[in-house]
Image (cartoon, rainbow, N blue to C red):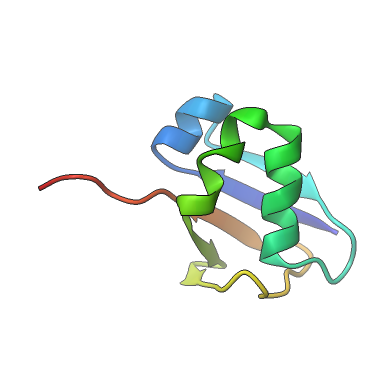
Length: 81
């Protein structure tokens, strides 16, 4: 199945693009997608564990299943004070 991965802030800078398509096996979870992305893009490996994840614009846990055409967004923590 194919999902659309969106990146924000530091993730976008690390990847050099705002989004990409990712092919996953049927029934893959958010955690499996995160692991594959970290493997494919080493610049993301240190950043992804701290990110919140949204699937189809709603926050999702690591064990959430993905479906064909889903939008998977990784949202880094906000800094400030």
